[in-house]
View 1: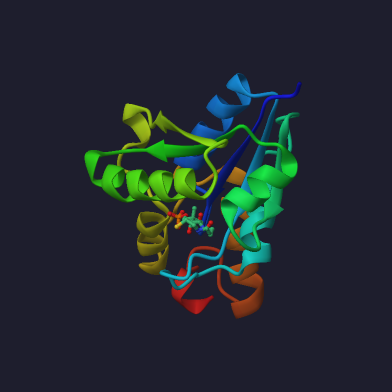
View 2 (view 1 turned 60 degrees about the vertical axis):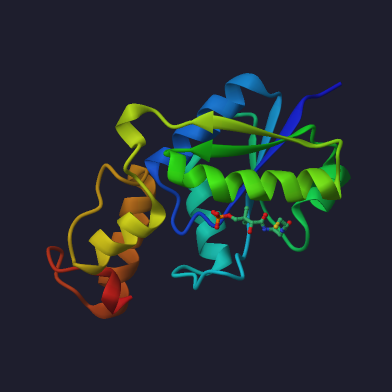
Length: 174
Ligand code: PNS
């Protein structure tokens, strides 16, 4: 039987920290489905199709990783595809309370899909999508914080849409 896991999140946008978790999960499971979701508690910067596209391009070379858009409850999706686990990344103790609550809710909704936490490496402890957005909004380069292919697409989009000079691209003009 194939061991499948789902890795859900907002991924607004995907960071090097997310990519690290995806790679670790892909080493453990036969198949990883990265699920891009709309989090009702957040205002998303990139639309859901853009976010999914950024991830697809970032994982293009990892054979056992797929990307999908989540519409509805996570546990229902997990059940539908036969996923045995929900993977979440943990950076700091501050992540834990929220993630633990989500894990307990999901367990209550479906006791067959277990949540598994993978800790971030030291290198990515500080990294989050909101930090990336903040730096980008200041017009600073986000190279090294997001996968190179994502950086290049964002930059290209901004320059094209706003007729910006190569050096002067910023998220706020997006
Ligand atoms: O990256 P995020 O924003 O912390 O991810 C949150 C996410 C998308 C994992 C969460 O909002 C989610 O699971 N949404 C799907 C709807 C769902 O199943 N909710 C029940 C758990 S409260």
